[in-house]
Image (tube, rainbow over all chains, first blue to last red; front, side, top):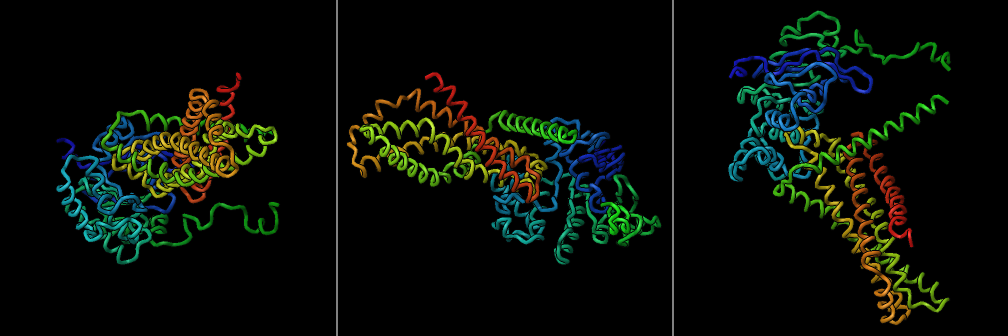
Length: 271
Length: 260
């Protein structure tokens, strides 16, 4: 029961991770509060998706640890890791619906695998989850017949099928039209309030994310650049934070990829 | 010079690491307590996809190869007045060599490449990651049924290939070129031995089935999840498994028939 009183749900401690010699995280530490919407933002390539995969135990860190409910994710054996994952839902950027199953079977899949409920009860549960995302009428469609926004909503229904404690969203707003975006924003915050789970949103869509987040971490260069509530973040003066929030093309984060001197290169100095 | 050595070293290390990963994948997907209720439907589906859908190409190729063998055998043997032996020639070349090898090559092209592309795309669209996050091991759910399906179907397809090929040979030799059917079949029965010829052919097809489907599944599972990566993986499946089949065929033949 002590876990439930503890307000920290996920804790990342001194995490380091690199991919083919490039350091993605260096000594990263952050906390995710129970029942809150925590946003992890940053420019592309800062390893936001990688962080979700580390939390889900799909990748191994080089050093540091990730505690979920005070359990070290990377010290669990395969069986317990799969147990833990059954309590996590993840909405992938592409939706990642199983293309060989209908929408109904996709949402029913986690229930069939992890519970012994009978078919009638599973049917009711699936219809309730689909109704929550507005796709009860699309139960018979195959994933290839859905639009991008619908696919993501169907995937969201699958992610909440087992009523997880933690729901992780990987770029939920990327590539969505304004209506689908509005629907998703609404759904994410409504589901969070209704189901009381801990939400982690990884995104670089500033306005949408700040509108629903309780707390925001801004990552850059493998570490936390800034953190705070959305209001605190908006008022920050740090030039790198400002550049990201205001979307300026050049600033502390340079517009140019590191390159030799322009003039010299054009004049053939490096030939 | 040093650079070239470095490249050779790096390539060798990469190959070794890939072989290790392939072995790890094989062990983790196959060695686990059996769960017949969930595994059986998945296996049946894959048997259909990998085996049944390969039937047409196997039937047609088997028929034509048998017919060509009958024709070629006849034109050579008739010079020596021993055209009655054409049945024996067709059956032995099919059962010992052509059926296992050609079926495995066709299987690599038809089913192996499809399996690689399917698994690679599942990886690229995060479906494999999705299974993991739902708490289902993709090695057991996706990889294992495909491995078993390939391993089971190739020997059966090989036997079908042989049977259809022999029938094709008899069509040409007996029905078209007019060899007496009694001597065609009697010669065949007298010379084809079950344990040395038929059984060795089946053993070959078991080995080929294992190797081809292992390569196909691993290339998909290990593919770089981009369109270029998947196209390369699919090509590698066909090239590697064809080379492996031809190389292994020589080794197996030398072991089985080398003493004669």
